[in-house]
Image 1 (cartoon, one colour):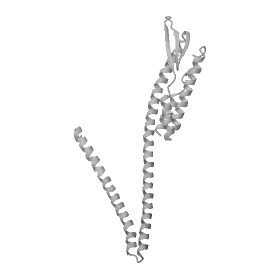
Image 2: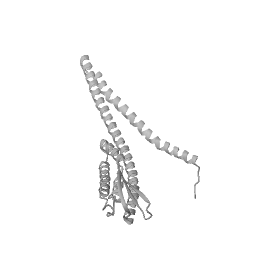
Image 3: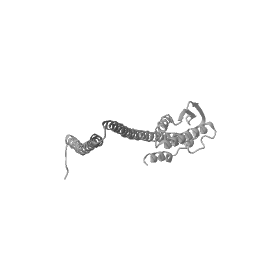
Image 4: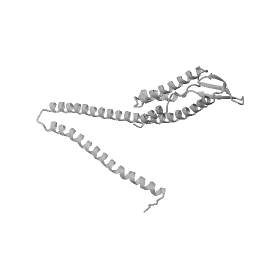
Length: 234
């Protein structure tokens, strides 16, 4: 049998389910508060009653009363401090979890971006290797390499090779260091791999005569990217 319903019904059912789930939580929370209040009142009034009805002088009663108030204040201060400390720790943990989630999303997007970058650049490079065009020259402008060559029709073509941008990862590394993120080593290793790729690119195009003799200009394999992804999901 198939049950068909509209979006409004689903929404009402969802809201009803959420309210049903919240009711026991609210009830338990109310019980905890009530128990805490009763316990505090008992701890306060029992010693107070003992002081009032004990057979000691009025001065001793007053002295005992203020001593008890001081002790009660110290205990209350300790309890409040412990509560605040626990709340601060819990808040920091939740903050770090949110930061780690953001870092993992950025890493995955960077893996995808660099994967496309690597694939496109490698195909461009292998085109040059396979065709071995004549009159090939290299021009460098900033971080880009412009490979200028002539085809069989004597028309001039230009292929652009550019380094992998790691500026976003450097920003992520700074955040990971400050938050002591569990992805700190992953980010650092990722940046190191990118720097090796960029260095290999410089070395390759520096030697114009032999630059088409290599098979892999981008020495970052897909396994390097898969390693980053696997570390995120573990």
